[in-house]
Image (cartoon, rainbow, N blue to C red):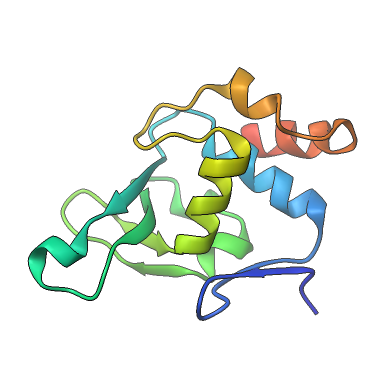
Length: 125
């Protein structure tokens, strides 16, 4: 049973805090694999805004907690991860900003000491 489940459909599931903090390292590595977005779909007549992670490359390297949440991409976006709850959490609690470039030092400063190795492992995935 997952320890952390995020999203309306519980599409992102972490079995441990180790995996959660690894995910932050993975998303913050600034290698062009991902970018963080709030898409304002309500401006186009849809229900509301969506917190999304755009996935551009290296799809086989994504950990299963993300691969299970993939939806179809568009244009140069190979896949998307739609999860308002996760995007809000990493933005509010872990200093992620919208776009492709993250400040690793600011994000690292939010990681508890016992999970620093997990964060680093994510940086190296």
